[in-house]
View 1: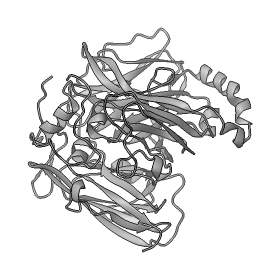
View 2 (view 1 turned 60 degrees about the horizontal axis):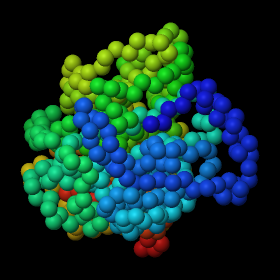
View 3 (view 1 turned 180 degrees about the vertical axis):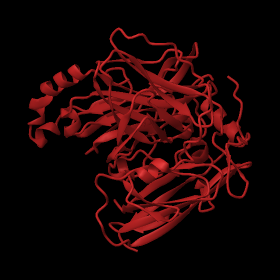
View 4 (view 1 turned 90 degrees about the horizontal axis):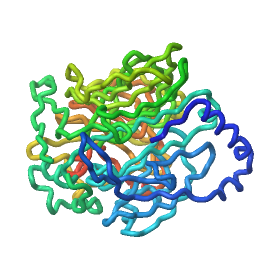
Length: 489
């Protein structure tokens, strides 16, 4: 995965400084990066597992781009099935978004070229076929800003994922009670697995909390075999060498298909300075909640003395945990357990941090042209999740007009939280349960049970942009629609 020592980072900055002075027309002619959607082998809990991956020319996962470089990528499908890759949080032209409602699937053996101006920050890439994302067809996408390139900080990327030895389509079929076969996703195929995968237990009816009416709130739909940080469990975690008294930018990406965590810095304290690639006013702390598809940039200043410092991702409603270790040279790294002593409380039902976040650069003040209410519904039995009472197969797009300021309120009337992601736009959280504030700018916001969250954005390119829950079980059984942006009413 992506790590870089502070000294190495500074040396690389010097080496690239001349390139930063080149005219834009010269830099735009740089060679395209290559990416392959392919299979690879991991060792998980002492067993070999075949999973998917997005492998670059260096043989590692994902991409990191320097400041001002165009996103020029040749993506090849080396799998034995069609797929499609979405550049999560980036805003390319709709034709390059990587979503099957408007883009053709990438055929077996096909190479497709992408070329657009990227947004700087912490992003990721993943298949927009639910079982492919379950099969780990996902990777980091880091675009450094000039300020980040110049800062005296070591960069550490922590990419989280949940893992099952079951084939992904079997996971989804179990979630749906054996009724996924033939389910019409209109481009989100439910066939085509990845790995030979072991029996799992379901956690339907996980009584993680109660709402005001006494109805049970659910946290976790499925018990995975393992939780990974940079493809590894705590049986054999990644140990990142850091300097005593060093300064770190920790980029955390929750690429999990269904799992939310509390990120726990342990003995360290950090400053949360960005979410979903967007700067926020710094928030100090040692524990931060992160839902599926969300990202966090945390600045950590390490103690002057030698030491080893675990950074853990603790699964909500469970004792399960994963993570990595920041360790100075020669420090003793203690054995870590994949199970915490105590169950971790809910992360997706805690909006305290969301209330506290403030964008460094808010949306420009202007009159709201259009309000849209989006009702989120569904149940565990039958396992069916809806937007405005409809599943994807019979969805009604949400109409808005290009350029207008839109406020959209998610009303979650279900007993599970939903991380809601809007393609092609950056939005700002402006209210929770009617309480107004100028919150963070994001591309994915979690909406807890029986809660209303309001976002604001300026409608972008006239096109059909996907709007969906980023919990793959919910998406696969219908919780997806489109934002229909038109040039006129």
